[in-house]
Structures are given as structure tokens and as C-alpha cells.
Image (cartoon, rainbow, N blue to C red):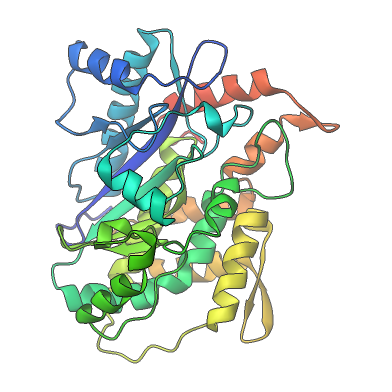
Amino acid sequence: MTESAEYRFGVEEEFSIVDADGNLVNRVYDILDAAERGSESAAPDSIKSDLHECMVEIATGVCTSVAQAARELEDLRRIAGEAAASLDLRLLPTSIHPTAPMSDGKLVETDRYLRLIAGGALRGDGVHNGMHFHVEIPDPEERVAVVNRLRYHIPEIVAMSVNSPFYLGEYDGVKSLRFQYYEPVPSTGPPPVLDKWEDLGVWLDKLAYSGVRELRDIYSDIRLRDRFPTIEVRCFDVQRTVDAAAILAAYVRSLVRYYHRRLGTPFVPPVTEDELIENRRAAYTRGLEAEFTANGDSLPCVELIETTASDLLADEPIEEEYLIRLRKFAKSGETGADRQLAFAQGGELDADGLIEDLDRAYYEGENRR
């Protein structure tokens, strides 16, 4: 696999903290202290808190290949997991805890979070874990142009990443409740098409009523950054294994590279804006079983992923191994949500079995789904 210093990137993952019985517990600061005291140290800010005290986040350094990122994620999952285990706690790779009330989570009350929650740009009444992918493009105008193209791939990215089908032990036919939960929030969803970097100011002004003051206050599926020269793709549920996270990272990094190399050529949107929204909804509802619409025609989600992956593999791929594995994964049809749903038989959820399965998956390394 060819490595490239271009399109450097980083990956962040968020996990639920649970006790020995699988209940959400608000002990992130205890885990951070234990990780700092552990026999193996992690880089500063690579293990940290987030929106709720029952969540812990890990973050790789700047990576030049998905293989490097996978190694770092394995190490960070292990270090954070060992810190949790020293306190008789566990970390679960699911975007919403399958049985615990969201009200069990205690908010991390920073001034920024409180401002955004008060305005409606952020929901603080629920615990939800995601995976974020940051990829570097130094020129801001080029970042805007790439996002204008990348946004049309949001539905297939969502469909592959769904991993939150249960809440309070119930499945209501939605494979990513995290997405459904955030549907009403005005700062979420696909980012708008912009002509130039300066237009971001107009977008910020339109959202000011909801408490938004700066770019990082916007929780769109793809977010342009100004503090760092990066595009942040936020539309993943957290993944059950490192391998699942790695192949999705390879897909997005390859898409960014594909479009960045073609900025001088005309781009025709493959779907209408209404179709993009409906396809996104179908993706978080049905995952890889979704049917998408493009200019009035129906297309199976898996067929679109296969076509896109084939195009990327024909384009001097820098992540060939992972793209091949992604095609196999898409054809299998089994997302993290589908794996969780296997624990519900006859309308009854085997909650203990599911918690144990998620606990094992957290430690599964690369090449093991």
C-alpha cells in the first residue's frame, strides 16, 4: 500500500463508560487520571473528556496512512480500556447505550456547551458517541470546493457506519438513533454549497440565533475548520472495531483525494438537494439495506458504494487494501447496527449478551471485524 504525506489526517472515537453491570457511569475524570498513572502513557490530549462525563474520547496524532491510524487506535483503545478496567469499568463502542436512559449522563458544563444548548445548536439531554475524521487540505478555497462535492456521499457514509439501533432496549426500525436524535437541530445535516470561503460568514450569521459564534459551533455532517487547515467529517456513528473505523477512514480519505485532484474539472451534482436529504434519512434508518434516489431513479446503497469504490481503486489508490476490504464489507450487508440487532430475538433484547459483545469488539484489532 502506498503511503502519502498529502491528505494527512486524524481520527477521533467516542465511547460510553459503563460499570461491571453495563450501566452508564459518569467517571471520565477517574479514567483520565488512571490513564495518566498507567504503565504506558499516551500523547497529550489523545485521551480526553467530551460532552458528558459518561463518555471518553480518543484521538490519533497526524497520520499519513490508514495502517498507521489503525495502529494508533488499537493502542489508544487499549490504554483507555486498561485505565477503565483498573476501576472495574468498561468502554462500549456504540453510538447510543442500548438500555440506559440518556438522562444518566452528566453534562460537562463548559460555557461554550451551555451557550450552544441554550440556543438549540447542541443537544445536551442525551448521550451519543461518534467518530470524526479530519483530513488536511491547506488552501481554504480548495477545502470549500472539496466539501461541495464530498457532501453528496454523506448517505453512503452514514449507511456503512450505523451503530445505534436500540434505546431503552427497544428497536423502532431506525439503525442510527443518534442521527434521528439530532435531526431537529439547526446546525446539523449536510453543509450548504458555498461559492467561496468568505460565504462561511453568511452561514454563521444565519445560525447566530441558535448560539453559534464560530465554525466549531456548527455540528454539520461535514465541517470546515479554520483553526486547522482541515475538513472534518462527522457523520459516522462510532464503530465497534478498529477495522470498521479503518475502512471508513480509507473511503473518506480516498474520496477527498479523488475530488481534490479534479477541482479543475466541471462537477455535476448526482442528486437533487431533496434527494440528498431523503437518501440520508434512508441511510440512517436502513443502513446498507437502503435504497437511494438519484434524479428520480432508484439505486441500492450497496451498488452505489461498489461503483464509487471501483472508481477510487482505478485512481492510483493510496489505500487499496482498505478499499478492497470495504467492498467486501458493503457486500456482506452487516453493519454495527445489524450485529447489535442479532441480539434481539422474538422482540426480546439479550442486553447482557449485547454488552459483552460490544466489550469484546472494543478490543478487536485490525483485520478482525
